[in-house]
Amino acid sequence: MKTAAAWAIALFAGMGTAAAQPTGPYVAGHAGASGGDGGAAIVAGAAVGYMSPRRLAFELEISVRPGLDIPTPDAIILAIYPAPTFEGRGRMVWLQTNAVATVVDAGKLRAAVVAGGGAVNLHREITYSLPLPIFSGGITLPIIPALPFPYESRTVTSAETALALNAGGIVDYAVTRRLRIGVDARYEHAFFSDAWKTARVAARAQWGF
Image (cartoon, rainbow, N blue to C red; front, side, top):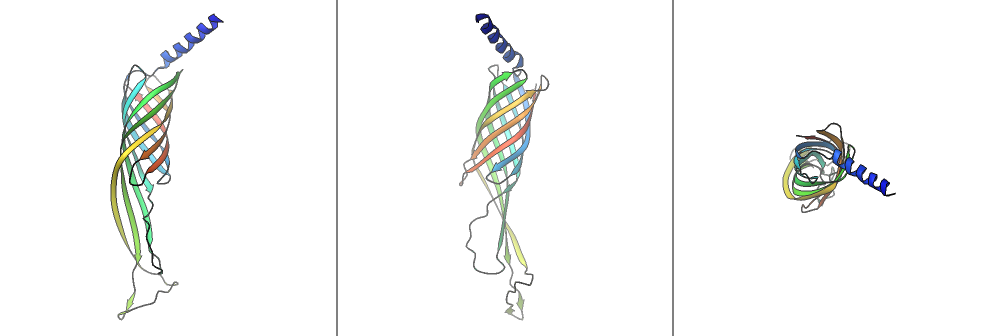
């Protein structure tokens, strides 16, 4: 029994040592999708980091979401026909510093927990279309539902920057000594005037130097 236990300890210790990610700088990129506030959106980004001998890495990450569904502001609409229309869209840029701690390192497979914080910028565009009155000889014609009605469209833009936090995990596989590929899943929270909560899942590739 003691011999078996000794072999098991030696085996797990050897696996961890052989599979440990080399210390030093690295770069990483990710691409995937996010969901939650803002609807489903494509997400892409990159990071630069450094892996310490204690299997704790620190990285600076930038992430971009170019296509978001922005909720339109509440408005009291008078009973007119045709009714005004509203369309909201936007984009987000996240800049965060993360700590990545390896918790499982067996063979070529690694699992790590990640958490960090930084800032996020949200750019909003709200386009509203208002019906234009039709005049004939100084008299406004009645609005007839069956007839097409011209609209005037205007776009209002705004931007807001807030504190951002994230937490999640990374599971990847060592394809070569320097290249790792895997999955990066995070929960993200932005402290705008209205809290913004999203979850993202992305494919991740990492290259060590």
